[in-house]
Length: 313
Image 1: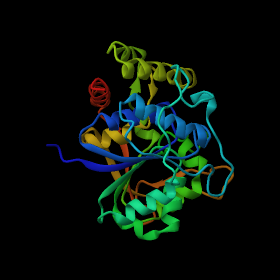
Image 2: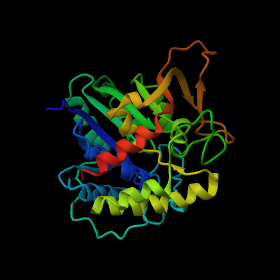
Image 3: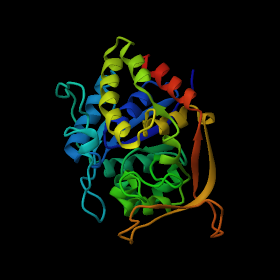
Image 4: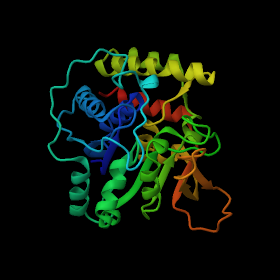
């Protein structure tokens, strides 16, 4: 019997969020005890709907989905329909979800669930703006000791940003929340653009999902084909990055990744560099590291892992 790691996925689906959720639900090493939704790629009512759709696609309508914060802590909401389409999951045809959201607010559930947990019992896996996580920490700082680690998709250092020259989307949408999280004392593993841009999905690999002949394979292929079009045009690379599943892949096979313990701060004041993850990569500030900053990946192993797990659904 595989020993399961308890995780909570905090998400704003989003095509790559959807693949991350599917990967987690296909992996016996992980016990997804809940999915919390936040506004980000699209507004909250759509991210929550999309999370229900993805759980049902995976054959896991039992997974509890909670709707959370509908806007950042301080700033106005910025969304990404240009990339993810008007629904956030454009590409496939979706029937309305049959399941229902939980009545409890995501932040309330996070606080309650973590307070009831043992120390370092639960891993948080945020793959969107960090609003829900930060609001829970502000509301009840005691929950920090209950979190084993936060494995988060967000930020960039060596490759800069993807929504501004300095900032990656998830951090830019709510930099004040990211600042709270990075100052929380909880061990953080960051999967930034620096590593996700080193694992590029090609149309040939996307076709292998279609060739599975399953509903999950077909919809995953349609999702990623839609998502792929934007980055191929923007970056002119051989393929495009699929960001959020990196967090789940790290939890399953951490040996696929290499990183460095560093001190990271988030810019919350400058209009020019708002949301920048300021990484003290060479220890210039003499501060204790608060983050494992991941920058290398075995890309073949990453795509093989995703294919193998999605093939089981």
